[in-house]
Amino acid sequence: AEATIPHPRWRLPVFGDVFGISIRTPVQNSMEIGRKLGPIFERDILGNRFVFASGADMVAELSDESRFAKHLAPGVASLREVGGDGLFTAYNHEPNWGKAHNLLAPAFTKSAMRSYHRTMLDVAGELTEHWDERVGDSPVDVSSDMTKLTLETIGRTGFSYSFDSFRRERPHPFVQAMVGALSHSQRTTFVKSTALGRLLVRRSDRRNVANLEHMAEVVDEVIRARRDSAEAGPEDLLELMLRAARENDPHRIDELNIRHQVVTFLVAGHETTSGALSFALYYLSRHPDVLAKAQAEVDAVWGDEEPAFEQVAKLRYVRRVLDESLRLWPTAPAYGREATVDTTLVGTYPMKVGDWVLVLIPALHRDPVWGDDPEAFDPDHFLPERIRSRPAHVYKPFGTGERACIGRQFALHEAVLVLGTILRRYDIAGDPGYRLKVAERLTLMPEGFTLQLRRR
Ligand code: MNH
Image (cartoon, rainbow, N blue to C red; front, side):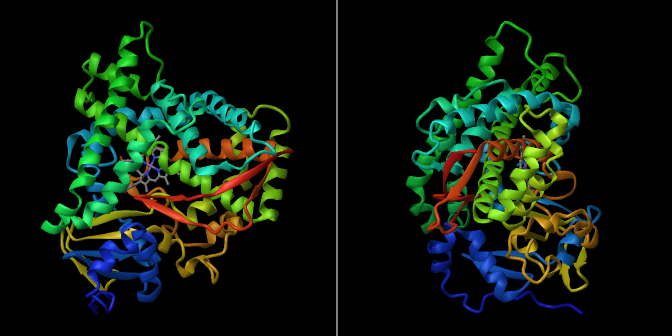
């Protein structure tokens, strides 16, 4: 039988919806509504209809690539200003998606990961050098330092370009411009559907232009640095793209699209991994038993040696800590799916070709299939036998299908390597008075979370 989709009873306080709390935290606000209305609901935001779906049965169907495909949700579509038809923001029908996907796939194979391992270790070493100076001193700002680390890692592995992140007092201006652009995109997506809204965000629009210009300058600088260098470039993302252009490869992408890919990877390649590391450190600091078990694993598997490539994936428990952190706070918290045929979702909700829904990942990750206390942090959720006993498609931090995250293995290798490095070297203590505050700028990130460090 067909059913109508529940919506909040109060449609009137549209202003509250738009200019209140939810403009800064739309994901947490939608999670709250979902707790009341269930696994599928709709919201009307200034005349825009949004359907949120998070039931395990629904997401399983939405993962069926013969009926559904990626939809560029409004918040992501407005990032076209940043990434154009780069991989993340390309529409399914745009030819540059397939070209770039094929061209860049070799940079995400296991052997490619092996080639990044050395650089990832070096960057982790810069973090510990920086943190060693803070041992027993004032606490470190976790998200800010994780962002330094992940930006440095993608800069050097992907483009052989250093942002000198750990030699700076303040974050690199690229980070400030990017955070500004992501926040702008989140804030203005709904508001801009009305004339009044467009007027209200004019100042913010101007600031956004400056941020976009700055990001474009950084992209220019990254490409120029390579073109000016006398030696042949190392086998990195940039080299794959520039060489294909030089050699007239059938998969080559043009100059403008190369720029879109560079900025896409600089943003997508660090912001979400930084959040994932920050949440993992938060949960480790709150669960002494988990912390002790993770430290014991690193000591046993790595000993005092520098970890070889294969030794990273052997940190099975640390990986479960990361998986569980991404369950509770998937740092890219939603993705869009649109019907590619006329169909009915879970036999109940009719969808015409082009109709789309947003998968609210944190709500999916709290579905009853996760047990009766889905809010509890428990890495054992990811024990192999527990994974086998759950249905497929209930864990989607990296999206789904053809348009799922290309950087998944990259992020996992980097994050486990860094967590292992930190856990082996320091005892960490969070501020007992800190209450988790999750900042939203399309992505999720703990805000104001600090750690006090002691050398082990
Ligand atoms: Mn990543 C797509 C989450 C790390 C590069 N990424 C996606 C999607 C999710 C996602 C979800 C799908 C979005 C959608 O369907 O609209 N990504 C993450 C998370 C992490 C992450 C949670 C870290 C943790 N991503 C990375 C890293 C890189 C990267 C690291 C690059 C080195 N991601 C991408 C790109 C895409 C993507 C590029 C777009 C892929 C495509 O559509 O072809």
